Amino acid sequence: MQHLEALTREAAALGEGALTLAGTLTADESEVARTLQICNACRYCEGFCAVFPAMTRRLEFGKADLHYLSNLCHNCGACFHACQYAPPHEFAVNIPQAMAKVRVQTYGDYAFPAALGGLYRRAGLTTALALAVGLALFLLMVLGMRGTLLHEPLAGNFYAIFPHNLLAAMFGVVFGFAVLALGIGVTRFWRQVSPGERPDDARGAAIGGAAHDALRLKYLDGGHGQGCNNDDDAFTLARRKFHHFTFYGFMLCFAATAVATLYHYLLDLHAPYPFFSLPVLLGTAGGIGLLIGPAGLLWLNMRRDPRTMDLEQRPMDRGFIALLLLTSASGLALLAFRDTSAMAALLAIHLGIVMALFLTLPYGKFAHGIFRSAALLKWNIEKRRPSDLALGSD
Ligand code: SF4
Ligand code: SF4
Image 1 (cartoon, rainbow, N blue to C red):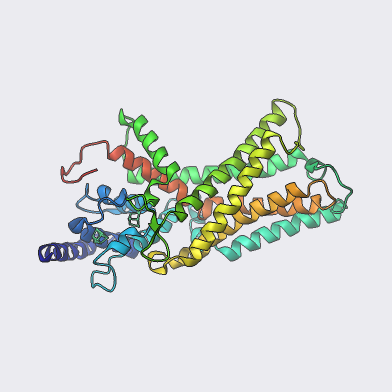
Image 2: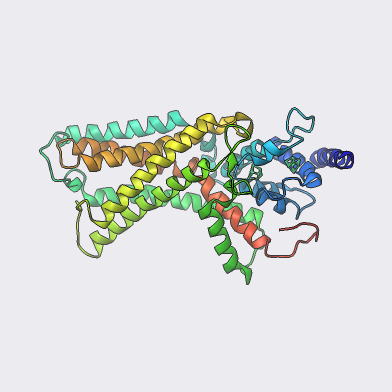
C-alpha cells in the first residue's frame, strides 16, 4: 500500500509537471490530465468501464486523449465512490466531475456553426420552457387570428388545422439542420481524436461492438452488472433503465413518424390513422416510454450526489428532460382528445413544444449521446489492436 501511495504521489507530481508544459490545455482539461496520471499509477478501477483500459494505453494525455476519454466516461460515479484518493484526500481525484466538465466543453469546441457553441452553457430549463411556451403561444395566436382555434370536432384531422406540407416543411428544415449541425460537430470531434484513422478489417466488428455498448448502455452497469451510483455508494440500475425507456421511446416516436410518412407518400394513406394502425401504436408506445424515461431521469437527477456532477450542467440536463416530458405528455393528450373541439389548441401546444425540442437538439444534452457513441466506436477500434505500450489490458 505504501509502495502504491509513493508511486501515485510520483504520478501526481508528474501530472502537475506535465500541466506546466501543456500550456494549451484549459483548466478543466488540465484537471482531467492530472487525475489520469494518478489513476494510471493506481489502476484500481480498471474493470469499471472502458475509460480505464483506454487510459492504460497512454502514458501522456494530450488534448485529443482528454476529449476522447471524457466522452467515453458515462458519468456512472463508480470510480468516485471506490476511490481512496477522492476528496478529502489531498489528491482530490474526482473523475466523473472532471470529465463532465470537459465533455460539455467539447460539445462547444466542435459545434457547428462555431459561433453557436456557447449555447451549450446557456441551454437551461428556463430557456427550454420559455421557447416551448413562446412557440406554443405563437401558434395559438395564429389559430386565433385565423378563427380555427375553436372548432367542431374534426375526427382527428390535424391537417384541417395545419396543412401537411406546411408541417413537413417547417419540421423538416429544423430537424435537418439539427442533424447537419450534430453531424458536422461529431465529425470534427472524430478528426481530432482519431487523426488519420482508416477503414480496416476491425471496422465492421468495431461498429457492431460500439452499437452493442451504446444500445445496451453497457457502461452504466458499474462493471459488475449491479448498476451505477446515483445518490450515494449504493448501486442502482435505475439510471440505465430510465435511459432505455427514453431512448427507445424516442426511437419508437421516430419510427411512427417515418411509417406515417411512408403511408402518406407511398401508399397514399393520409392521417388521421385509427388507433390500431401501425403509426399510432408505435407513437403511443413511444410516448409512454418518453413519459416514464424522462420522469425517472428527472427524479434521479434531483437526487444525484452533487459531488459526481458538474452542477453548472444541471439546467441543461433538466431543460432537455423537461422538453422530452412535455413532448410526450402533450402528444398523448392530443391523441386522447383528437376527436374533440380542443384538438386545434392541443395540436398548437404540442407542435410548439416539439419545435422547441428540435431547435435545442444540436445545442443541448442530446449531444452527449452522439459524442459518446463516437467515443465508443473509437474504443471498439482501439481495443482490437495491440497496445503501443504493451502495458495495457483490454
Ligand atoms: S479513480 Fe481513484 S481508485 Fe480509481 S484508478 Fe483513479 S486513483 Fe485509483
Ligand atoms: S464515472 Fe463511471 S464511466 Fe466514468 S470513468 Fe468513472 S467508472 Fe468510468
